[in-house]
Length: 91
Image (cartoon, rainbow, N blue to C red; front, top):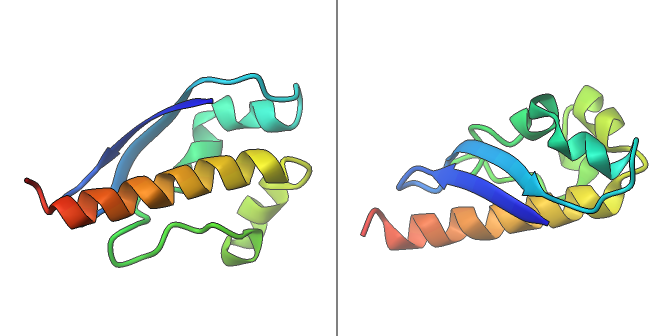
């Protein structure tokens, strides 16, 4: 899985796109859709990146049902990127 993401100095995510993957059609492949990744925009910094489904809005949690491993891979990668960007502080 290859994810392209952009972060503000605070660690807030301002863009994210799944560039490459070998996910299951109909499940993990949904991560290719902009609407799937939109749940992460604005997260990080002051509002932590959700790394558990119970931290998502109901409609977002429903969207990742059946693709838990994909969600965890994406969310944990973005959370780590957010922490790194915040630690760098724009340096």
